[in-house]
Image (cartoon, rainbow, N blue to C red; front, side, top):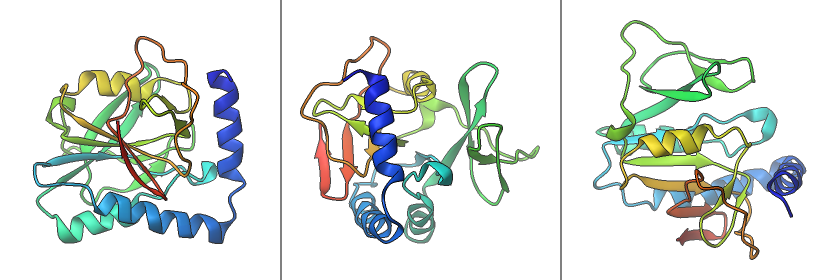
Amino acid sequence: MTKDELRASFKNKRLALLPAERQALDDQLLEGLKSLDLSAVRYVHIYLPIAKWKEYDTMPFIHWLRQYHPEIHIVVSVSELKHGTLEHFIWNTESVVKNAWGIPELVLHPNTNRVNPTDIDLVVIPLLVCDHEGNRIGYGKGYYDRFLQACRSDVHKVGISYFEPLDELIPADPWDVPLDRLITPAGSIVF
């Protein structure tokens, strides 16, 4: 299958999940995130979920981090739609609104702290599916590949998926950045 065919197939599979089924899967994904070694993490980048696409809801993990790891800075992105890039900010109490694509983002204020991608230790990445080498299928716009290329080479890249890795390899382009780890409802896979 091509990337576009895989993207469409797994987007439809995710949209077809029933609410009770999805809640059970979300609980398992949260346990996987809680099991990450966060001892050396000071800045964790977490996506804000797009509800209409039924992405895994990261808010319970964010609340857990705030309660049990208050020393960790939670970083979220704001899309620069004109340039196809992301800007990163520490999320404290700022409001969230949906951008032109329906993606939740911070309402920036003069005192919102910008974060350099090289400061980030761990990135939690939304995706549809990946293969056994960590090659992933996202939404096809390349935002995360450009962002990850700007991070340090040792940044830990953790993907979240409702689905197990594919046995077939996903065709990877030279600019694609693979995952270091995948968390699924069945457990955690290190690449």
